[in-house]
Amino acid sequence: MIKSMNTRQLDAFFRDVLKPDDFNAVDSSLNGIQVDNDGADVPKIAFAVDACLETFKRAARCGAGMLFVHHGLFWGAPLRIEGVLRSRLDFLLKNNLALYAAHLPLDKHGEVGNNAVLAGLLDIVDKEPFGLYHGIKIGFKGRLRKPLTVDEAARRINYRGTPPLAIYPFGKAENVTCAVISGGAAMEAPDAVGEGIDLYVTGESSHSIYHTVLEGGLNMIAGGHYATEVWGVQKLMERCKEYLDIDAEFIDVPTGL
Image 1 (spheres, rainbow, N blue to C red):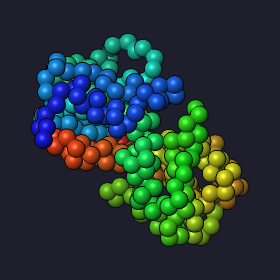
Image 2 (cartoon, rainbow, N blue to C red):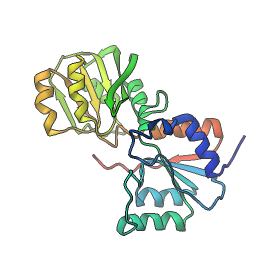
Image 3 (tube, helix red, strand yellow):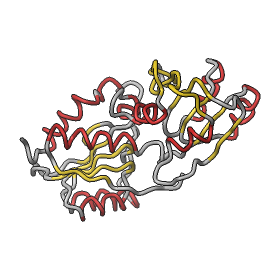
Image 4 (tube, rainbow, N blue to C red):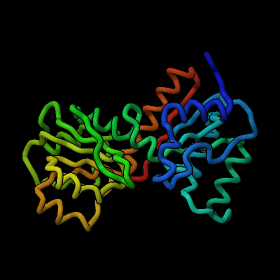
Protein backbone atom coordinates (compact mmCIF):
# COMPACT_ATOMS: atom_id res chain seq x y z
CA MET A 1 0.00 0.00 0.00
CA ILE A 2 1.08 3.59 -0.61
CA LYS A 3 2.38 5.30 2.53
CA SER A 4 3.06 8.72 1.02
CA MET A 5 2.26 10.45 -2.28
CA ASN A 6 3.22 13.66 -4.02
CA THR A 7 0.71 16.44 -4.55
CA ARG A 8 0.06 15.51 -8.19
CA GLN A 9 -0.84 11.95 -7.22
CA LEU A 10 -3.12 13.25 -4.48
CA ASP A 11 -4.69 15.74 -6.88
CA ALA A 12 -5.47 12.87 -9.26
CA PHE A 13 -7.11 10.92 -6.43
CA PHE A 14 -9.23 13.86 -5.27
CA ARG A 15 -10.24 14.71 -8.83
CA ASP A 16 -11.30 11.13 -9.45
CA VAL A 17 -13.51 11.20 -6.36
CA LEU A 18 -14.91 14.75 -6.45
CA LYS A 19 -14.92 15.62 -10.19
CA PRO A 20 -14.18 19.34 -9.56
CA ASP A 21 -14.01 20.21 -13.27
CA ASP A 22 -17.75 19.57 -13.48
CA PHE A 23 -18.22 22.73 -11.37
CA ASN A 24 -15.94 25.13 -13.25
CA ALA A 25 -18.86 27.14 -14.65
CA VAL A 26 -20.69 27.59 -11.34
CA ASP A 27 -18.17 27.50 -8.48
CA SER A 28 -16.06 30.60 -7.84
CA SER A 29 -13.72 28.59 -5.65
CA LEU A 30 -10.38 27.60 -7.17
CA ASN A 31 -10.98 23.91 -6.59
CA GLY A 32 -7.86 21.76 -6.51
CA ILE A 33 -4.30 22.63 -5.55
CA GLN A 34 -4.28 26.27 -4.47
CA VAL A 35 -0.72 26.30 -3.13
CA ASP A 36 1.72 23.57 -4.12
CA ASN A 37 4.78 22.32 -2.25
CA ASP A 38 8.27 21.87 -3.69
CA GLY A 39 7.52 18.41 -5.06
CA ALA A 40 8.22 16.49 -1.87
CA ASP A 41 6.10 13.49 -0.94
CA VAL A 42 3.23 14.10 1.49
CA PRO A 43 3.51 11.72 4.46
CA LYS A 44 0.31 13.00 6.09
CA ILE A 45 -2.76 15.01 5.08
CA ALA A 46 -4.55 17.34 7.47
CA PHE A 47 -8.24 18.09 6.85
CA ALA A 48 -10.12 21.20 8.01
CA VAL A 49 -13.13 23.30 7.07
CA ASP A 50 -11.32 26.62 6.62
CA ALA A 51 -8.01 27.85 5.21
CA CYS A 52 -6.70 30.14 7.94
CA LEU A 53 -3.48 30.65 9.87
CA GLU A 54 -4.70 28.55 12.80
CA THR A 55 -5.40 25.49 10.64
CA PHE A 56 -2.08 26.04 8.82
CA LYS A 57 -0.13 26.11 12.08
CA ARG A 58 -1.84 23.03 13.46
CA ALA A 59 -1.36 21.15 10.18
CA ALA A 60 2.37 21.93 10.27
CA ARG A 61 2.64 20.92 13.95
CA CYS A 62 1.06 17.54 13.27
CA GLY A 63 3.54 16.81 10.48
CA ALA A 64 1.16 17.19 7.52
CA GLY A 65 2.51 17.95 4.05
CA MET A 66 -0.89 18.95 2.69
CA LEU A 67 -3.95 20.64 4.16
CA PHE A 68 -7.29 19.81 2.50
CA VAL A 69 -10.03 22.38 3.17
CA HIS A 70 -13.60 23.11 2.14
CA HIS A 71 -13.13 26.88 2.12
CA GLY A 72 -9.87 27.82 0.43
CA LEU A 73 -8.01 31.10 -0.04
CA PHE A 74 -8.91 31.89 -3.65
CA TRP A 75 -12.40 32.58 -4.97
CA GLY A 76 -12.26 33.60 -8.61
CA ALA A 77 -11.01 37.18 -8.59
CA PRO A 78 -7.28 37.93 -8.41
CA LEU A 79 -6.14 39.10 -4.98
CA ARG A 80 -3.33 41.39 -3.89
CA ILE A 81 -0.71 39.45 -1.95
CA GLU A 82 -0.69 41.69 1.09
CA GLY A 83 -1.81 41.77 4.71
CA VAL A 84 -3.47 38.61 6.04
CA LEU A 85 -3.24 36.79 2.72
CA ARG A 86 0.52 37.46 2.49
CA SER A 87 1.01 36.12 6.02
CA ARG A 88 -0.93 32.99 5.21
CA LEU A 89 0.96 32.32 1.99
CA ASP A 90 4.27 33.06 3.69
CA PHE A 91 3.53 30.42 6.31
CA LEU A 92 2.53 27.79 3.74
CA LEU A 93 5.65 28.37 1.65
CA LYS A 94 8.06 28.49 4.58
CA ASN A 95 6.63 25.22 5.93
CA ASN A 96 6.37 23.56 2.50
CA LEU A 97 2.70 22.91 3.23
CA ALA A 98 0.45 22.37 0.20
CA LEU A 99 -3.12 23.68 0.28
CA TYR A 100 -5.98 21.88 -1.48
CA ALA A 101 -9.58 23.13 -1.64
CA ALA A 102 -12.91 21.62 -2.67
CA HIS A 103 -16.04 23.74 -2.29
CA LEU A 104 -19.20 22.76 -4.21
CA PRO A 105 -17.73 19.37 -5.23
CA LEU A 106 -17.61 18.48 -1.55
CA ASP A 107 -21.09 19.84 -0.86
CA LYS A 108 -22.73 17.89 -3.67
CA HIS A 109 -20.94 14.52 -3.60
CA GLY A 110 -23.41 11.70 -3.06
CA GLU A 111 -21.25 9.73 -0.61
CA VAL A 112 -18.57 11.87 1.03
CA GLY A 113 -20.29 15.24 0.64
CA ASN A 114 -21.56 17.47 3.43
CA ASN A 115 -25.17 17.10 2.34
CA ALA A 116 -24.97 13.35 1.86
CA VAL A 117 -23.64 12.93 5.40
CA LEU A 118 -26.32 15.24 6.82
CA ALA A 119 -28.98 13.28 4.95
CA GLY A 120 -27.56 10.10 6.46
CA LEU A 121 -27.61 11.53 9.99
CA LEU A 122 -31.27 12.42 9.52
CA ASP A 123 -31.97 9.03 7.90
CA ILE A 124 -33.46 10.50 4.73
CA VAL A 125 -34.59 7.85 2.26
CA ASP A 126 -35.78 8.08 -1.36
CA LYS A 127 -33.10 10.76 -1.70
CA GLU A 128 -33.26 13.21 -4.62
CA PRO A 129 -31.21 16.30 -5.55
CA PHE A 130 -32.50 19.59 -4.13
CA GLY A 131 -31.53 23.26 -4.18
CA LEU A 132 -30.71 24.81 -7.55
CA TYR A 133 -27.47 26.83 -7.48
CA HIS A 134 -26.39 28.25 -10.85
CA GLY A 135 -28.03 25.32 -12.58
CA ILE A 136 -26.74 22.57 -10.26
CA LYS A 137 -28.69 21.00 -7.41
CA ILE A 138 -26.20 20.66 -4.55
CA GLY A 139 -28.43 19.44 -1.70
CA PHE A 140 -30.78 16.55 -1.11
CA LYS A 141 -34.42 16.01 -0.21
CA GLY A 142 -36.44 12.95 0.64
CA ARG A 143 -38.58 11.16 3.15
CA LEU A 144 -37.49 10.64 6.73
CA ARG A 145 -37.43 6.94 7.52
CA LYS A 146 -38.98 7.79 10.88
CA PRO A 147 -40.93 11.03 11.45
CA LEU A 148 -38.93 13.47 13.56
CA THR A 149 -39.72 16.54 15.59
CA VAL A 150 -37.60 19.62 14.92
CA ASP A 151 -35.75 19.12 18.21
CA GLU A 152 -35.04 15.46 17.42
CA ALA A 153 -33.67 16.45 14.01
CA ALA A 154 -31.49 19.15 15.60
CA ARG A 155 -30.03 16.58 17.98
CA ARG A 156 -29.23 14.23 15.09
CA ILE A 157 -27.07 16.79 13.29
CA ASN A 158 -25.52 18.18 16.47
CA TYR A 159 -21.74 18.43 16.15
CA ARG A 160 -19.90 17.91 19.45
CA GLY A 161 -22.54 19.63 21.54
CA THR A 162 -22.85 22.67 19.29
CA PRO A 163 -26.41 24.04 19.52
CA PRO A 164 -28.02 25.22 16.28
CA LEU A 165 -27.81 28.92 15.53
CA ALA A 166 -31.58 29.06 15.14
CA ILE A 167 -34.66 26.85 15.02
CA TYR A 168 -37.87 28.02 13.36
CA PRO A 169 -40.68 25.63 14.42
CA PHE A 170 -43.31 27.02 12.06
CA GLY A 171 -44.62 23.76 10.62
CA LYS A 172 -45.76 20.29 11.61
CA ALA A 173 -45.15 18.77 15.04
CA GLU A 174 -43.57 15.76 13.30
CA ASN A 175 -41.72 16.01 10.01
CA VAL A 176 -42.12 13.39 7.30
CA THR A 177 -40.10 15.05 4.51
CA CYS A 178 -36.81 16.91 4.75
CA ALA A 179 -34.34 18.84 2.58
CA VAL A 180 -30.72 19.67 3.44
CA ILE A 181 -28.16 22.12 2.07
CA SER A 182 -25.12 22.76 4.25
CA GLY A 183 -23.51 26.14 4.88
CA GLY A 184 -24.96 29.45 3.75
CA ALA A 185 -28.13 28.36 2.00
CA ALA A 186 -30.85 30.30 3.81
CA MET A 187 -32.13 31.70 0.52
CA GLU A 188 -33.10 28.20 -0.61
CA ALA A 189 -35.74 28.01 2.16
CA PRO A 190 -38.45 29.35 -0.21
CA ASP A 191 -37.67 26.40 -2.50
CA ALA A 192 -38.47 24.07 0.38
CA VAL A 193 -41.73 25.93 0.99
CA GLY A 194 -42.59 25.75 -2.70
CA GLU A 195 -41.96 22.00 -2.84
CA GLY A 196 -44.05 21.29 0.27
CA ILE A 197 -41.10 20.10 2.37
CA ASP A 198 -41.80 19.72 6.10
CA LEU A 199 -38.30 20.43 7.41
CA TYR A 200 -35.41 22.37 5.88
CA VAL A 201 -31.89 22.04 7.33
CA THR A 202 -29.06 24.40 6.44
CA GLY A 203 -26.19 26.18 8.15
CA GLU A 204 -27.11 29.87 8.29
CA SER A 205 -30.28 31.88 8.57
CA SER A 206 -31.26 35.25 7.11
CA HIS A 207 -33.63 37.97 8.23
CA SER A 208 -35.08 38.18 4.73
CA ILE A 209 -36.51 34.66 4.73
CA TYR A 210 -38.08 34.69 8.22
CA HIS A 211 -41.59 35.67 7.19
CA THR A 212 -41.56 33.40 4.13
CA VAL A 213 -40.72 30.46 6.37
CA LEU A 214 -43.33 31.51 8.93
CA GLU A 215 -46.12 32.08 6.41
CA GLY A 216 -45.15 28.96 4.45
CA GLY A 217 -45.47 26.74 7.52
CA LEU A 218 -41.92 25.42 7.20
CA ASN A 219 -39.83 24.00 10.01
CA MET A 220 -36.23 25.17 9.57
CA ILE A 221 -32.97 24.47 11.39
CA ALA A 222 -29.95 26.73 10.93
CA GLY A 223 -27.38 24.35 12.34
CA GLY A 224 -24.36 26.62 11.82
CA HIS A 225 -22.21 27.09 8.74
CA TYR A 226 -19.20 25.40 10.31
CA ALA A 227 -21.17 22.71 12.13
CA THR A 228 -22.95 21.60 8.94
CA GLU A 229 -19.73 21.49 6.93
CA VAL A 230 -17.39 19.48 9.15
CA TRP A 231 -18.88 16.28 7.77
CA GLY A 232 -17.53 16.19 4.22
CA VAL A 233 -13.87 16.77 5.04
CA GLN A 234 -14.02 14.08 7.72
CA LYS A 235 -15.76 11.58 5.45
CA LEU A 236 -13.24 12.22 2.67
CA MET A 237 -10.44 11.84 5.20
CA GLU A 238 -11.71 8.38 6.08
CA ARG A 239 -11.78 7.47 2.38
CA CYS A 240 -8.16 8.60 2.03
CA LYS A 241 -7.15 6.43 4.96
CA GLU A 242 -8.97 3.46 3.47
CA TYR A 243 -7.87 3.75 -0.16
CA LEU A 244 -4.45 5.36 0.14
CA ASP A 245 -3.30 4.01 3.50
CA ILE A 246 -1.94 7.48 4.22
CA ASP A 247 -1.79 9.14 7.63
CA ALA A 248 -4.49 11.80 8.08
CA GLU A 249 -5.85 14.03 10.82
CA PHE A 250 -8.88 16.31 11.20
CA ILE A 251 -8.20 19.80 12.56
CA ASP A 252 -11.23 21.17 14.38
CA VAL A 253 -11.33 25.00 14.48
CA PRO A 254 -14.99 25.93 15.08
CA THR A 255 -16.10 29.49 14.43
CA GLY A 256 -19.37 29.34 16.38
CA LEU A 257 -21.11 30.58 13.24
